[in-house]
Image 1 (cartoon, rainbow, N blue to C red):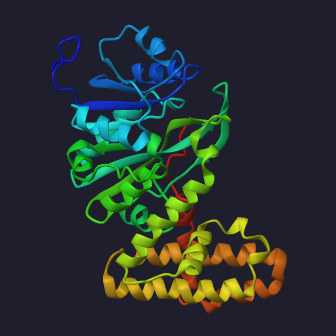
Image 2 (image 1 turned 90 degrees about the vertical axis):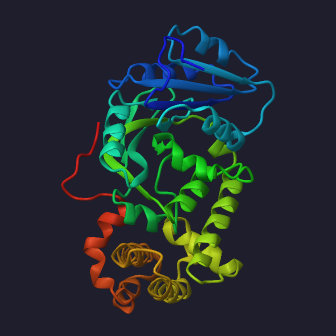
Length: 347
């Protein structure tokens, strides 16, 4: 079916899933329509909204907008799979219905994927905005190189789903796992990273609106459960069989600031053995680039020891040299924090 306006094969499908976002969907759509790159279709799938969301979108007179309505709510992973089936672009760019795009987002990501045919996904850095769209200072940086993104996925999702552009042919091979009502993007990226290259651009090209109605805020515990399941699969790919306690402790490695009193010498002893075990398992399995995993492990170790100082005092820093390869930490912290030197910080 040709697009309204006559264009049959757009380069990009921009996909916005939405559910009861009457207050913010208009701004999200406008940020797409204002792109410097114009060869796109904008696919909006309304997942059974009961407010005026669809009316807001349909009032915007642009032939590139395609609105699809679900009569009843089907959930976000099924809606994302519906988009994969309907999209006609070579690439598909995701955007949440309460977020915003920088005007050059599509231009930058299309240029990257055109220049890197070995990459299946490219994300970007981001910045939060408040309820009224005012930008906050903090830039949410992510690792850039595919090898660094890959190893981050062993610990956390290193691609912001609202920012990613996917090569549609590759994404369709995998699809979203509909059992993951939360973190379906993380689960997809983790599966894809085993066979494809996934990267990030060092520019702020998306803005995440923070407000009380966000689905992620309301389902934090479900999100943790799904992340644990994803990490278990990744660890088993290394030949490891984590028990429930190991998995919970592994989950906490990236989130050590929340450990509180649990960040004691017992945890440090476990973490040292666990991190060294990850490196040893990777040498046998060959799953991750060794340099990238070494950087990640060293960055986590330095952060753990530093955050243990308020509780353990100087004893915490005495743990630093007990991890083989800890001396790589200064170079590692850039990859760990997603802050490579000499790169643009974005807008």
